[in-house]
Length: 308
Ligand code: CP
Image (cartoon, rainbow, N blue to C red; front, side, top):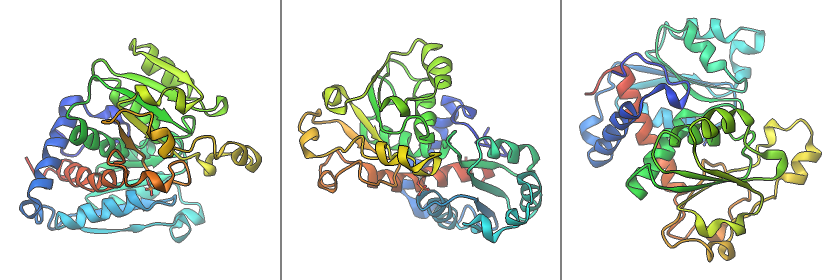
């Protein structure tokens, strides 16, 4: 039963519950008209203390396409956070206005704190360099539609694995399915955090390898998840400038890849995927953004309890 629940971490839902969300998302994709009024009379609040294009717009589009309404802010400076109001107080107030809240915040753990003080479901729309569970719903729905299953894949994650919250959430989520192997491709300074390695991969006996060259491993991959180097999380610009162009996926490297490999990217992209790759049929990152809206429609409907 997902009605009234929060989604703060990708592991908050069991694999069976995720299946429920994806089954509904598929039904919405097949017949959107059937679901266009189920959210009537409901309000979604989007509290974005950090910039966003995809997540905020796809949440808002999702609610509007369900027949509901939205309110919120896209800049912390236009909210009373700029006067020093705490997340706990903000959520206690907004929870009295809205039926469900999607919140993005630069501080790790902020969404968890919000959920502890909220009387309505809270969805973590990204908390610092920590987790981004609805991006994971987006990624998993794309994998399901393109590959048919969540098991038996060799998944390459490339770029900023240290600060990339979408990577942390996706590794956690995919670690629950059988026979997946991870190839972690990053410079030494941007390796995946130890807690993911120890508490997720090693603890569950999941095969993984850490490498620093994409071209050495791209031919082994079923899924390549590219990521941007997260400028906003660096403490000094010099390090960012040194690392920002560590990887560029281009046509040359794609020649080495399997014919049925899929390329995902949470976006925004900076220059880690050359524009020449966009027309490659294996490039799924723009379709992925649209699946994100359907995944969020299904999630909102389930949390509100307006759909079986
Ligand atoms: N993928 C993602 O979170 O994009 P935005 O930062 O634009 O929301």
